[in-house]
Image 1 (tube, helix red, strand yellow):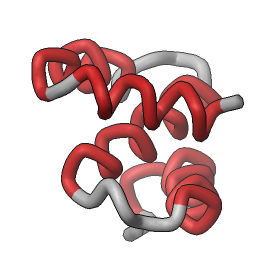
Image 2 (tube, helix red, strand yellow):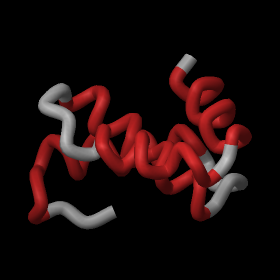
Image 3 (cartoon, helix red, strand yellow):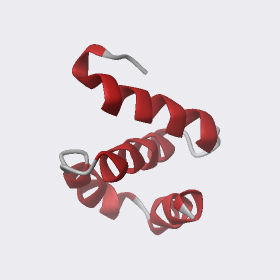
Image 4 (cartoon, helix red, strand yellow):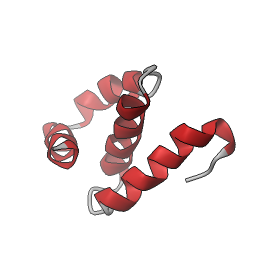
Length: 68
């Protein structure tokens, strides 16, 4: 479901980048991780969603000390 939503957001275009960027500050870890993946998809639409989601979850779990 998240992959489909991310693809739809990316397909709607750059106008939604600011909306996604707002979600990068969400308190909910799931929302923040999904926003990170969606933001990455704007930069590289062909990137693997599952790998990007795993990386985003690590960053959320470990905080700013983690790198993607």
